[in-house]
Image 1: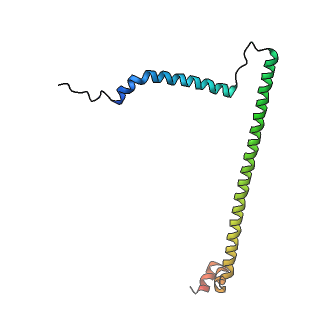
Image 2: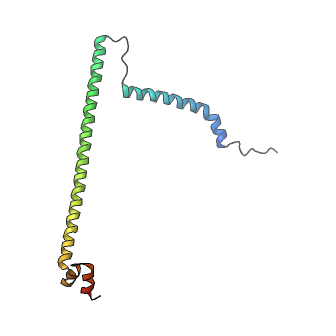
Length: 134
């Protein structure tokens, strides 16, 4: 009777047999993706055989694209600055309103304070003790 190897169908054995084709496929995908990203970011380089007029047109288009991108970045920065200023202004307004409410509350508490307590708060510490009878 033959005993079956428990490690025969292990994950390591399965991945070892499939490793080379997967590695090759992943490498190809990475190369293709890198080329696509490079083309999208930097544009395609004009071929050497293209006439000078077309190269000048291509360069003019690239300059135009760069100028548009710089303009968009400037607008985005302005919008971010406006949003930041609005947020800070709102935070300051909320703080001011909180201070105002706290001040009004303190003023109301002072008005509601009995006269004997007001007299206790006036003067030095020693006078307060005497006034309190201590």
